[in-house]
Length: 512
Ligand SMILES: Cc1cc2nc3c(=O)[nH]c(=O)nc-3n(C[C@H](O)[C@H](O)[C@H](O)COP(=O)(O)OP(=O)(O)OC[C@H]3O[C@@H](n4cnc5c(N)ncnc54)[C@H](O)[C@@H]3O)c2cc1C
Image: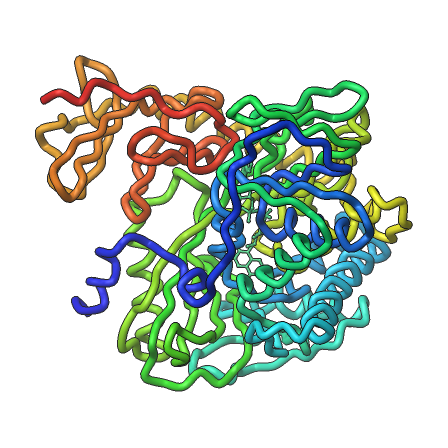
C-alpha cells in the first residue's frame, strides 16, 4: 500500500502526454485577420478548427497555454453516447423526440470519429468496446431498469445484464453496444497537423482577454494583439467572454480523479461506470512501454468543495485493489468539467445578440462525443451547412423545467459558499506550514492562503477569488487554490489555471 502511495508524492500528470510527442507553436506577435478565430485548443476548439480548415476557411486557433493541456488532456477518453443515467430523465423532461436526437447526434459523432480514424489511418489505440452502466444497490437497480426501458424506446442497441465481465458484484447493468475508447492526444495530433496542412495558423501561450464587437469580431490578447475575423468560436472550456450570457450562473464545475494502475488481474475489456455515487469509472489503456494499464476514475465533487483531495485518489486505489489488485500506480491526475443547469451543453451563438460569436461548453464529462458534435454544429453554422442538431443545444434556450429548479439550487449553493468562506477563520499561521503543505492561514489578521514548497519557499496569496469574491479552498492533491462557487482555479503563486476568473489572486508579502 505504501509503495503505491509513493506515486502520489509526484505531481499529478496524465499518461496521455507522456505517450505522444505534440508539436509546439509560437505566441501570437502581430495583428492578424483570419476568417475565423477559434479560442481554446481542446476537443471542441481543435475539432471546429479542423472542420473549418477542411471546409476552406482561413482559421487561427489560439490557446492560453499548450494545446490539449486542459480538460481534454486529462480525460478518460471513452467515446460513448452512454452518458450515465440520462435517457430516462431526458425523455421525462424534454420528450422522446428531443432525447432521440440527443442520442443520434452523439452516436453520429462517434461514427464521425471512427470514420476519421479509419480514413486517415490514425494510430490512436482506437478500440470498439461495450459500455456498461451498473448498479450496486436496489434503488439504483430500479433506475437501471428504467434506463434500459428508455434505451428500448429510443431503439438503442443494448442489453440488461445481471453480472459484469469484471469481478465486481452488481445488482444489474445496462450495456450500450459498440461504443469505443482511444488515446485522445494521438488522435488530436493528426487533426492539428490537418489544420496546419490546410493553411490554418496555431498560436500557443496566447491568452484571449476580451472581444470587441465592430464590423468584424475582434479577439484581443493579453499582449495587446488583435485577431479580426468574421466569426469567433469560444472553446475555452469556461467561456472567457460572457457577453451577458450569464454563463457562470448557468453552469457548475465538477472535479473527478483518475489513477492509471498496473493490475494483477487482467482487464477483460469493456468500459464501466457506476450509476451510484461515489462514481467509479473503468477502462484499460496502454502505458509508455506498451503494458496494459487500468484507468480507475471517479470520486467526483463540486470544485473547491471536496475533502482533502488526496482522499479521493486513495479511495480509487482502494477500489482498484478490491477489484483487480494493484501492483503499481503509474499516473494520477484530476480535472474538472462543466455541467449546465439542464444537463444539455451550450453549443451555438453566445446569446441571441451575438450571431458571430459562437460557444461550446458544458459537456458534463461526456466531451468526446459532445465536443466532436460541437465541432460539427459550429463549423456547419459558419460554413452555412444545415445541421440537424443545431437547435437542440442552442445556448439561448430556456426551459423552465428542470433548469429553473437547478438554477435556484446552484445559486443558493454559491451564496452559502460565499458566506461560509467569509466566516471560516483560519487557525494556522505561516510558521505552522511544513514543506509541501498548503492551508488557509492568518496573516496580519486577514484570511490568506499559504503554501510552503519542497525547498521551504513560502508563497502567500489573498484567497478571495477575483471572479466574484468567494474564498478559495486549498486543493492538496493538485496543490492549487480552487473556488467553491464557480470553479476557478489558481496556482500557488496566484496565477489563473482555469476560469471564469481572469485575474490572478493577489500575492501577499511572504516575509517571515
Ligand atoms: C476526469 C475527467 C474524465 C473525463 N472522461 C471522459 C470520458 O471518458 N469520455 C468523455 O466523453 N468525456 C470525458 N470527460 C469530459 C471531456 O474530457 C471534456 O468534456 C472535454 O475534454 C472538454 O473539452 P473542451 O475543449 O471544452 O475544453 P478543454 O480541453 O479544457 O480546452 C480548453 C482550452 O482553452 C484554453 N483556454 C482557456 N481560456 C483561454 C483564453 N482566455 N484564451 C486562450 N485559451 C484559453 C485552455 O488552455 C484549454 O487548452 C472527462 C472529464 C473529466 C474531468
